[in-house]
Length: 216
Image (cartoon, rainbow, N blue to C red; front, side, top):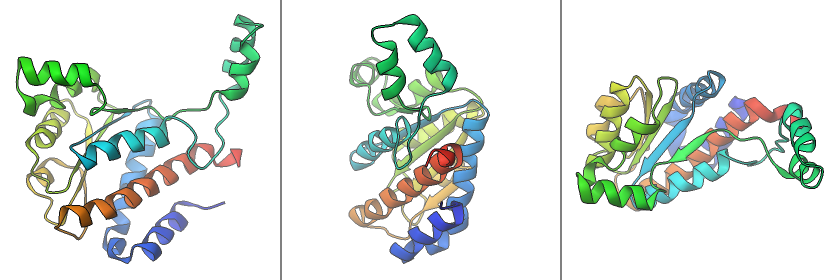
């Protein structure tokens, strides 16, 4: 069974450029664990490739990633009790989830916001609706200067959410509004994005391992 430090060592062995962020990544993992332990959820947003990463990471959190996640026994009992036909199947197949929402995924809502108010508010408006004090926002921007991500960070802070920023080396404007900044040491967009995904995967591994390691 791997612990947090083993996952971080594995990441830095495979991507030595990330070694300088090892402690910050560890801190981000603990922030997310605290969020879930307190009944919160993750809100994740990005543009372009970072939008795809937002969707991708939600997929790793909302179902099993590397560890089997059976649903709670009480839920299994209720499923069987409610439906003799489907309850047993649902109890066997459904998996435990770590609540996460990709703010890039809601096309109808996003286009309504862009059309009716301001495209730069596409994520901030959703934070107004979804955000609660125990939640964490993960904002992904290669430059750190994407206005809609910056506005999301500002809005999250106004609602007392914690903010994790994942950016290129400078941190851009975003760094002013982040509780934890994971600024990978690259400037070129493609190279930044090449380092962001393994970093995000490692966070998922750390968090999943914390909550589900006994299921291995």
